[in-house]
Image (cartoon, rainbow, N blue to C red; front, side, top):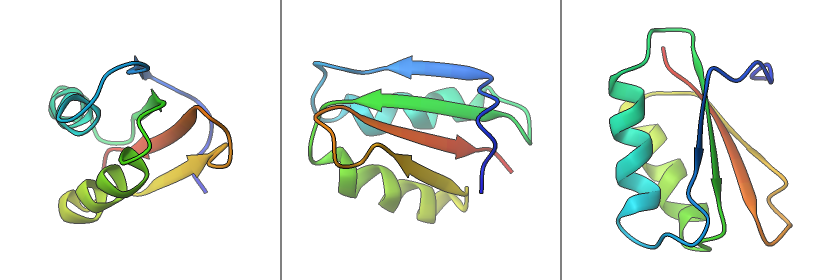
Length: 78
């Protein structure tokens, strides 16, 4: 479980592909290991694309409020 100590936050509401995947990737590149990124999005396909990206990059993540119109991901850079 990722602690909810958020170091960086991306509010991507209203943004569509490729931004809900591209912006977290760029933000994680600038973060230190152990830091947590919160991604907020209302783009439904991000429910699939963000987890795919995190598996590819090897970063643990949690989907919070996945049943709401706005989704939150907590991603920990390792």
